[in-house]
Image 1 (tube, rainbow, N blue to C red):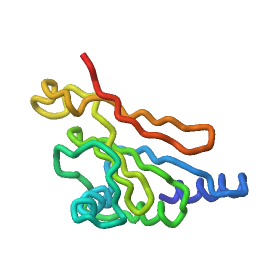
Image 2 (cartoon, rainbow, N blue to C red; image 1 turned 45 degrees about the horizontal axis):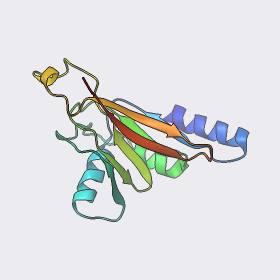
Image 3 (tube, rainbow, N blue to C red; image 1 turned 180 degrees about the horizontal axis):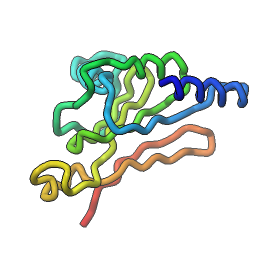
Image 4 (spheres, helix red, strand yellow; image 1 turned 90 degrees about the vertical axis):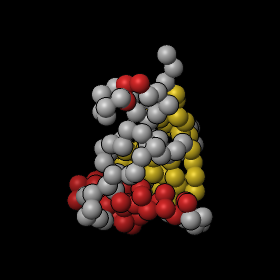
Length: 141
């Protein structure tokens, strides 16, 4: 978190503007589960983007505060995680896209080699104007 904060500050200072960024990490933080709960409750700060979750979101019990730091820095537009191999949902939560990328594995869980609906990738297209588009790419045999 210290590295993230210092790097965002340094690059933003060099560019004389808050830089746009993405975060890629393996294990989701608690706010991924909070986002799903808010979405299911119809709360306005959670907007469905795509996909679905096929298992409970596994996050550390201790909240590191990383999501709060992301909100404070106003740089990160999306956070991409894996870890829960049957989850592939995207939710915009408090203005940040929280995305479970599709799975590419065959050995993570017993029997997962026979399951294909979660298999694929998340394609991130960055457009000329600096905006981006997210697309789930399904695995096809």
